[in-house]
Length: 209
Figure (cartoon, rainbow, N blue to C red):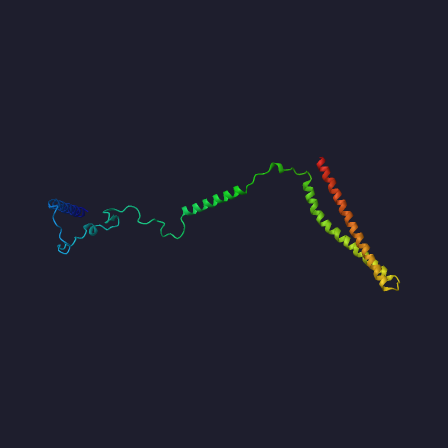
């Protein structure tokens, strides 16, 4: 370690001496001296190799700046393929902000004037409607069955009667079929009218309460 320091100090002293000689020569040189062209100039002596490159490894020393290396020459994220944690955090923050903005736009205040209290028997009506759906289907099937039975009975009665004219028998059967259908439709209409009246009566009672 002492030998390297002595060598460096010697090189430094020699360099200072050369610089001092150059300054003296520049001071002594007249201002009007004509500089010789490059072709007539004497070849400059070969430059001496830098002693610092011979004795220093260059791991922590920068020969260009003649000082220690400071920091990194390239950013640490230059050759990374995957995004860093900071970039992922920034993306998540952006997504959260965008979602919050969308929720704020979709959030429309509740109109207090449109709020109405539910009736006390709203849950009973809801359950009753589910049961009535099944009953309505059964009622329709029963009405259709009755109509078919009436038509079948009328046709059997028509075939048992002794009528000579086959055309008259067909006309009577068609008339009976039409009458049975009309009766079935009327029965269904009366049942629907009764249901509507019952519902209207229940609503009137709720309003009165």
